[in-house]
Image 1 (cartoon, rainbow, N blue to C red):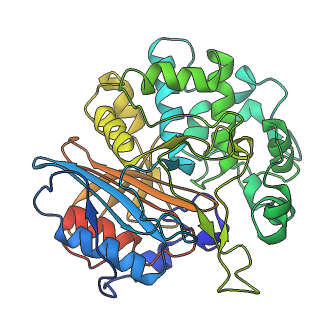
Image 2: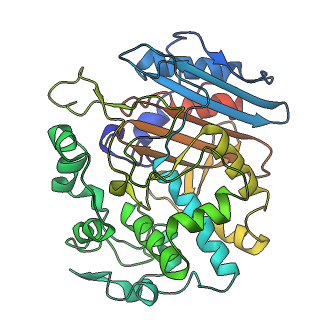
Length: 391
């Protein structure tokens, strides 16, 4: 499955592409700094420019390290007008939403409002059922580390055709979907394996996790806002509510909806109803806010030590040995020996990465406003954290 076909990119799904991306194609276009430049980011700049050269319309990026904040934008934010991409643009973060949800659930566990070893049935009685699916056998922890075995509703071909691809997306982009409608798609399929047998990413897990937040607290949006967004002053971070576009400043989002038949066609997919990714991909943020969130998380500002260790307790990712999955966050061992904690996320028209060192001293986030070009993702991470563009 390629990146254009997944609203959650995933290094697992992209392993073959990413691990063979070992060289840059060369710079394309000038980058624009909007913060005093910190030292040591020239390789990163070249990698971002190479992404634009490879076909990404525009990239917004920010790094934070001992030298300060380095912020830049490359390419265009609007293909129609030619307006430049903004370094402070807001965008949909896709499955990076999972890190926010996992943090809230771990806070609730620290408050003894729930246990990660509670069954899903305990919090959502009668929800996970049918075709061999059984919420009595799946724990909250297994949702967060994706070992539940539940079928990914986005892997259902009919659903994918209707809401993500081609004419289906264009016709249904403003449809309002309930969580139950998406879960019904998932539970029309049997589980892929028994709970705990292995790791396999599924958007169904994250949707259920957000519903458990609501059962244990107030609304999912309210819990994220009062526990993370407001304490950290993440002023660019929000949920879409009834709005179909990110708040300004923001660029446009683009997709090759008809890639199989018209590979050169690019559609503006900025607008669609946020209910279609509620709970597992709807948060809107900026590179700066994502870096502040990950910095605070790794420095213990959001979780007590025991719960932070739980967050970082990973399970083997059998599809990509260099990566392992914790609770709403992933660990990646780069080729230079550096280890980072990260999450990637995508919706139609947007691809985002945020990563941090374990000590919280160095963060890096970047966003593409196109969802089809992936060759420079790993080189960009290597450029920032290793100082080299090789894989």
